[in-house]
Image (cartoon, rainbow, N blue to C red; front, side, top):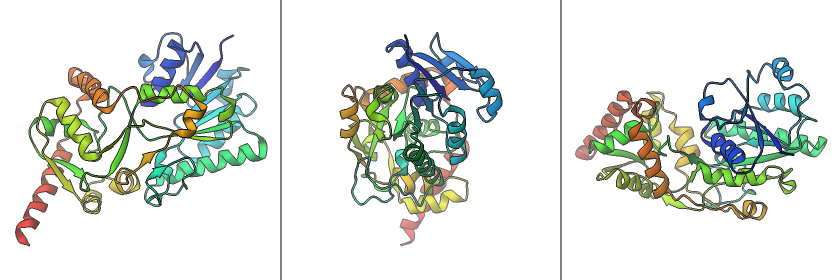
Length: 343
């Protein structure tokens, strides 16, 4: 008899890879509960339930008396949302897996090596503080009511439709790729030497699916990341190498980016000071004890070429230009060049 999983979300960068692995390789029965906007990315055989998860009565009516080996929450961002999930699924699932975030770890950390025991505290990003609140509520439910929760903390995970960057505009990564292709200077936060970890989504799926139905995972938190650590300069250079262009890196202090970004609605306080500007190296020993198959199969130099091949051949889907951000980059660089002249 197949194991059965329900995904809340299920069509995002991370969850799509997990669903595909479960269906195509591990023979799970998969249900996906969402609004049905990206159903085309799901593999054949997935049972899709089109509903608003916040309409609890409608969800219960559509689920009927179904029970699950795992319920996986990918779009829960606030405590109210996970409390809703507990009302919906308590007694109906053997495991509730909550996607938190590695950005919840203490900023700045006392040590750059991160384990699941690293303190959770992020004064710079509300998103991260909300994730911490969700974790605390769910672990309280585990301790007091034996609610079968597993916490998963991803870091920067990407797929064939995304190129990971530190500094980009509201339309995402593509304008930076375009600047590289045009030979323009590209802004990198800090001096480019801070350490970062990028994880290909299919590699993440190995770790995640290994925790599903795993008794050792109940009541525990796991980070799931690649074992490859790169500097931001190396990340941008790898992208430029894959494009076959020269990288014109322009380093800008994070505090300056925050100050000049706020005027244009760019939240670099959260995304940089609360996340990407802080050097981190993840120790995945705990995950590998629970999931011996976990491995980094797709290095960044491999993954970014897969992504760029897809992006450059799917202009309508992936090439969303951002002239406002492009002009902002030029202004930032011009202001710093003038400052050098005036000293």
